[in-house]
Amino acid sequence: MTSKNKTLISIIGPTAIGKTSLSILLAKHFSTEVISCDSRQFFKEMTIGTAVPSREELATVPHHFIQDRSIFNDYNVYLFKYLNNNSTLLNYYFYVNLNLISN
Image (cartoon, rainbow, N blue to C red; front, top):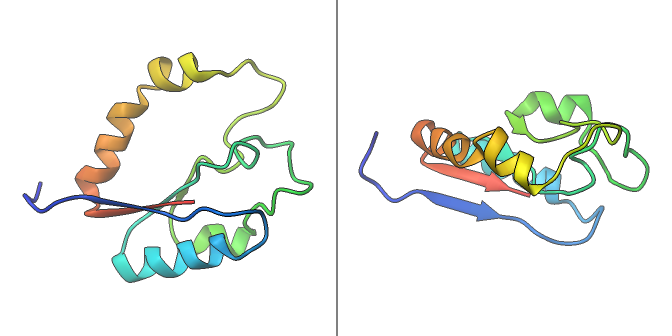
């Protein structure tokens, strides 16, 4: 792992203002991945009003946590943090990437 500082670039704003396009542009520029922090795009069944990235957009750069879980299965902060060990997951993403994009 490099000794350089790691950077998380967060892109925030309302639905349908171009966060996905900007995230992909930045991920390409920095040769990195996109980690979604959208609470609705996270669920497979929530497709109306969420502006889920298209298959083409998702194929452009690696994306994480887009339509990752079903609304029919229990999921909460405890499961996210402890059962999936996401602090380790984030450390892994930073191990392989100097920068990460969050939208």
